[in-house]
Length: 267
Length: 101
Image (cartoon, rainbow over all chains, first blue to last red; front, side, top):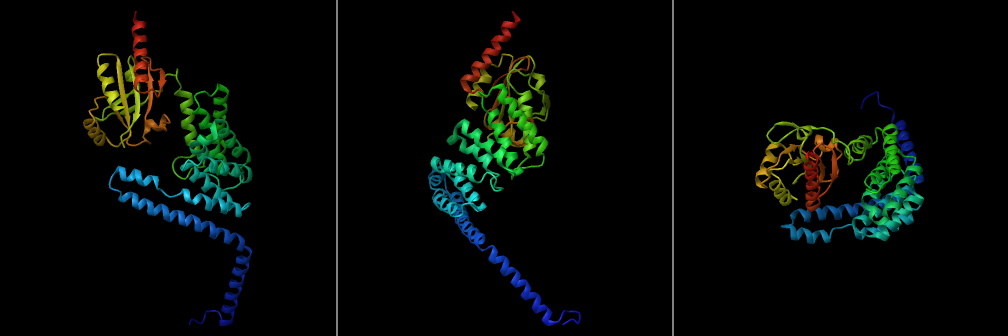
């Protein structure tokens, strides 16, 4: 042993102190830790079921077998577990996470009543939670069919107003503005409002990104380009590109012809 | 879509009309193979993926997305399919003939 090492009693004391500290911390966090463990256990069971399903799905021989499997995909049976947990954990942020699971799975399985309960609870009790950054997208893309146009809009506005988290407000602004712009019957006033939301996104939240892909601000730029330049009645902005033979061409080369542009793929 | 587009291109081959595919399947070689297999005769813009330059600039989020432009390059219809696309094109071609008189 090196002569520079601390005496035995000092090391023992340090270890004892450290252990004591951990124990005190542990005691204070006990309730939350219990809930966390419970929540993790449900998520783990769901993950396991999904992984097993993915494997079976990969091994399926043909489309018929895959279609039959799809009917049996896991998820729905976990709704009651997450609901029960969310009620038990009421007030804790884990409850927000559990309601998010309920909302997501319910949307996926077409369970309207469960989906609406989850959204209503999230909006009334957990609108300030940092764990609901996926809620705006879920509302505008999946839950909108249960909520209808007006409630979808109101739900997104609630998040914009109430949430103190940029990771929630930014997607809420983007979803709200996109929903308005996707509405063919939207009035010019509403379109103008959607534009203001997109501009606010670029000014206030230039760096907020979803889990994958470009920032909301970059997506907003795309949407604004679409409103400004790609509406019926506007001259289509020119675009230069390369065809399948490596030949450059421009959209404006086709003036004098009726042109159909088809953005497509076989994938 | 493809069967309709094939017959559309054939029907209007002598008219001032062009169908341009903005394809997101992959590189030129891959697209060429698809064109051959699918008997596609109209010009393509090679985008490489759904995040290619043209769909990105034009904020294309759903596939397929359709724009119908008149002879002046003005966007006149969006996302018309099949019969509605035929009617849109015929209307614009008729407009051109009317304007010449």
